[in-house]
Amino acid sequence: MFKGITRTVAAIAVVGALAVATVACSSGGGAPSSSGSSAAPEDVTLSMWTFLDPAAAADPRGAALKNIVDSYNAQSDHVKVEVRSINYATIDSEVIKATASGTGPDIVNVYSNQLATHVDAGTVLPITKYVKPWLKKVGDDYIFPIKGATFNGDIMALPWETRAWLLWYRADLLKAAGLTVPTTLKELGKDAAVLQKTGKTGLGIGFSSQGLGADFTEKFVPLTLGNGGSILKSNGDAAFASKAGVKTLEYLKSLHAEGAFGDEVLNMSADDVVNGVKAGSIAMAIQGSYRVAAARSGTGIGDNLKTAPIPSDIAGKPTNTPVAGQTLAIGANTKHADASWDFIKYYLSAKSQEKFAAAGVLPVLSSVYNSPSVKALPNYEELLSWRDYVLKNGTANPVSTNYNQMSDALVTAGQQVVFQDADPATALKTAAQAFDSSH
Image 1 (cartoon, rainbow, N blue to C red):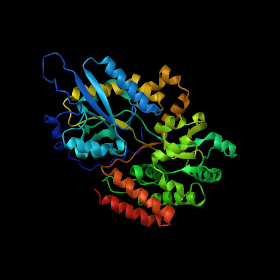
Image 2: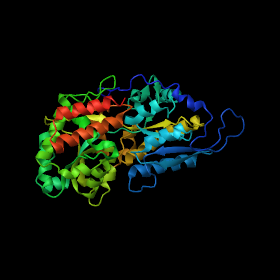
Image 3: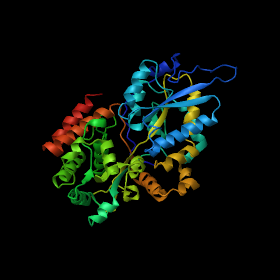
Image 4: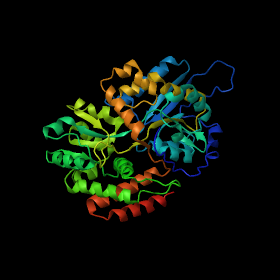
């Protein structure tokens, strides 16, 4: 279904590390276990750590999370879930530290890019015995490739969303400037330069090292793939110091040179770019499908924000989009694995998936696209276009235990080439050496 699944985690021995799960550590929820008891079920409170904030009314995904958790708690007699929201840039390190001290969560939300790190650190339990029967039951309805969450033959998490990267553009701003939607990368640069002259940032690409340098990396990856390159080798070492990687940096440098964006992007992280679109100060961006709904909530934005496949050098031929997603895993410290799995199943039910679809998230169950509630969504046709883009042009995002180090090395190279006139090949070679030495 997806092209070129990239596997970069080499020989991670997790069995010993995961033995901590058999130790009688206190769970994140702190509830006693009732396993093996013939007595009446005890009340259990499960802790769920996630980057989403159920109290953030402005974020449709946070609202969907709250709705799902509240619904689960209402229908569950003895098991309740409590959510702890942690910033996406720090949640992984906090889970690792807490697990090491025996106070990790029962359920943890892990971005697929970071899953290898958690497997290596022993923070999550294998869930093969739960997932395989579930997959057998749902069959082809589950569209996310589960081997993307499989390590050493064990399924370590279950993806609950599909993410694609798209070209975002303000249709009203393009129209006012007499522009049409760019169909090639060259047109993208020219249009962005025109929009930059209107007082907006023409094309928002975050070059800040904040937030793990994620925004820059999320642009470098699809453009390099579109140039025919790879990001990582099969052994996990860097493959991005290539002709394709150099071409990507040269393109980004040309965008700056022709005025598609200014030096203001040096201080932009992924959140800054999304907030800029939401505030109306950024006209175009390459961002994830999962954040469109939040950006549209900005004053005067709404349907003025449109999406399209990322263009390539050839009109009508989109650049391949990386495919990733948020997953749910069972924490290694839990004493309530069965109860945790019960909640994960509920989170991936059609009913829950419909709620996330309403929040602009691509469901992982194909049947959800045919449900009346999803068909009634004002952006239903857009959701279908995203799904089709993923199915036709999706390439699994690179996975590495040192993904953060890779992202940091890449954004540093981008800063040097685009703003300091460094040689692209040399900058990427230095970045590759820095990344390779980190693992």
